[in-house]
Image 1 (cartoon, helix red, strand yellow):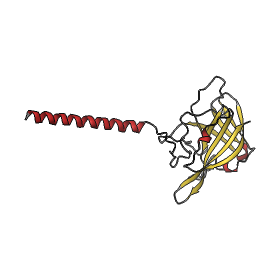
Image 2 (cartoon, rainbow, N blue to C red):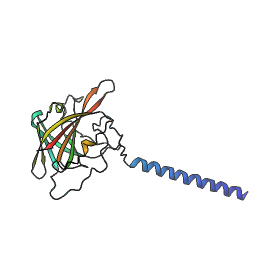
Image 3 (cartoon, helix red, strand yellow):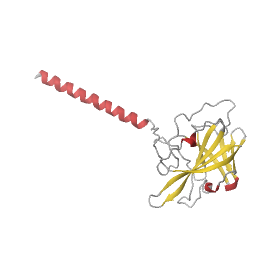
Image 4 (cartoon, rainbow, N blue to C red):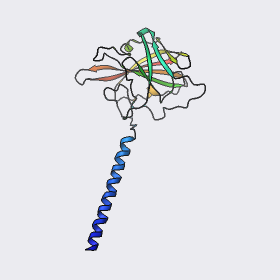
Length: 210
């Protein structure tokens, strides 16, 4: 009888230990961000895909300042710059307001070597407010945009090309470059689908430092 009681106690201890391990694994899985290359944003997120894991370059003393405003005269944009990182799914986050833009602060600053990325909403919100990048599709090669930073500098960029990306497309070229130059890439949504109530593509405007 004593042997049977001891066996039951041992079995209970084993079960409890297994439960504790399972609970720990669930907690860890919940709090560690996912960086899958196949991650896609969900509404109302408007980013493209998961940025590369190495988009966090060191900041040197000669680095450009932190961006404060984005100005695009040709489409009448003068927007405050928010700073965002990653969503829990590992995608680039988006600005909170319809009339502001969001700089991906885990990547280069605008004006530094590499590809800085700024996102903004498009379309018209339910309250009737037009969004900051509603006319971004009108930008053409040669158009200029400007970033004002916290050091009082204004950095000029020139549009090189516009490109449309499907949600599942490889968009690594948006977040990285290896030509040793400075780029600023703008992201917004396009192609609203009334049936699914979501955007089916992402528009990227590639620009180069002037």
